[in-house]
Length: 228
Ligand SMILES: *Cc1c(COP(=O)(O)O)cnc(C)c1O
Image (cartoon, rainbow, N blue to C red):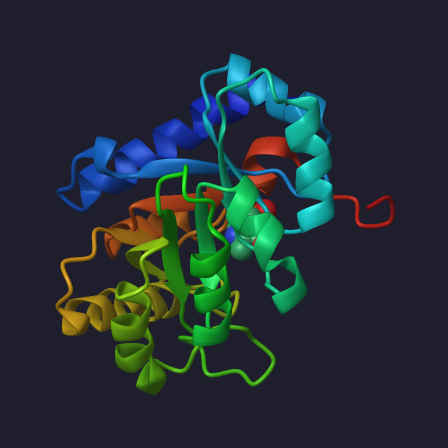
């Protein structure tokens, strides 16, 4: 069985070679450790091994882990679907939200962001695969949403996020990530963040400009949803 430290090294090597292959500085790609269903002890171990950024999908699960880890200077990212009744706690307890896909949620996060905290870093989630079931705003809605979110005082619009339909085909992976990169370029808002790429497709995402890769399985092992 591989240890977490081994997994981190292996991911760092994958990021490094993918960045070099794309002519990019490996330091321009940041690793977000996605810890949904994993215990606080796994995050503590990741911290000891040098990771600082943690991604969680479920609010209550995240708040419980944050309490258990309140002695550590971790940076918390919310990456799951957001219901209106969860925005207050998200605005109070996170540094980043990657999964904003409608204005109502953004307005609530902005209003509910405590004044003594820095503006909440936001990525707009875009549906680049066109599946009905996926969350994310439609590409056609993105320019208006981005303009409106950029104007909200409690938020700092940083970039875009996508979860493309899973495929093992490298060309298809890259096509989806290229769509997100091009949508960001067309916005022309000077955004610096592309949150894209997971355990199985981080190389394709980095080739297309990812600045955050969100890695769960390759870091912490398979998730057991039976227990979660
Ligand atoms: C679970 C999850 C990940 C991590 O996926 P892996 O395939 O385990 O690396 C990344 N992003 C989001 C939004 C997730 O929900």
